[in-house]
Image (cartoon, rainbow, N blue to C red; front, top):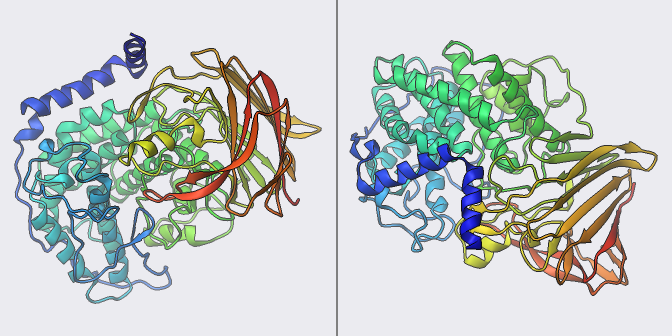
Length: 605
């Protein structure tokens, strides 16, 4: 009965319209009555793009495609195996199966994202860059790859048609490729046939995307708008309706999913980047096609979202806290920066939506502007300050070389991680007390429980349970809400405090004070039955514990308070790239009575 009650209460939080959309979609597919089951298309064999009329000089070197940001994808005459899972090496054999008959989580395939990744077509941008730099064979190879994909993935058969968002990303990448090659106004018939087949797949299932209340909606709306306007301008009459649908949906999704302070519905830095990238592509396309502007409200929310990402990105390294789900997405990889360098995305979004540079000085984050022929803007930036993004539950603290992020529960949309009061610390742009990431969406059960769970974050776990009960692979119940939040400065430094209590009566209040050389955290814990465990996930290095102090020789972490039942360094795990996990050291502090635990992390000023 307890679980049933949780399901009912959580369903109310998700909202009846969203649940109805998802149920209607699933029932329609199961009964084969959904309109998407009745569409047909024959994919073309090219040519899709032509050799550019001119070359470019002094832009930048082409980027090197990397699947999930870490697996090299060599460009050349031989296309990838579109059915091979790059994470496991396994190959699926359902290329002739209607996509709706393929399970969401096929145990034979493991993580289907490993199959989808090469079919996102971001490599088409790299081929375009090579062609613009004078590589005479790049366009021929690009056409071979696309033609091979079309031959290997007949319309609406096989896993690469299963996801409307994945289909949308191909549309967006083909559109950006056309922008790079200056072939937007003169597309080939084959390219238009391919775009039409893709948009025809996306349009019938956008209700499901809207029901997800996540970046599926923004991605698919952008693809409808981009693909629809492109088709309409080339005499494809259905394009007009799809373009209008995409514009309405994009306006709706941005208004609904992006808060006035820029926080996004998905509590994830990487999904925030993905959402912003799709908005950037839509705006680039709108401007390139001289379509009417989006609404003022759209641009206000997009600008706020750009400012949010800039605030969390460290200008020295481009890294950001590894908060929330992270599926390896980077949609506009026009420069050979690391996958975890968020500066190119934040900079492009700031220029497009805020009309200012993200950072005053130039760097590789400017490459996308040059490749896309976006006019530079006058520097008018301010250094990010200590502030709250209260709609999403983020407090950013800055002092000297250090930046801290405190996650506190503000859940208008479903949480993906049980990470209430997680604290992330970066010094000089390097992670010192990091989040663990998400690793994989379809791994062994132990990892599916571990990475999103409370034990995988820099916070307190009560009685060996998560802060919220797990109801499904991507769903928690009893969503937490913050009891209090405060942020400010005093004579001791920048300070922040937040608190929550969970459905079983446990309470956690965290007080944070940060100076140029020290982070002090006081955790008030009470209301638990057996024990509370505080965890600090330590930066890579050799940490040793002596008494109540852990040190790696340059930094130290001192823990004081009530008598501890246990204080030890154990082995934990971290995932900075999708599908990759590495060992890390974790300091665990266990108590059995209500108390205050003080942790002081010190570094060289």
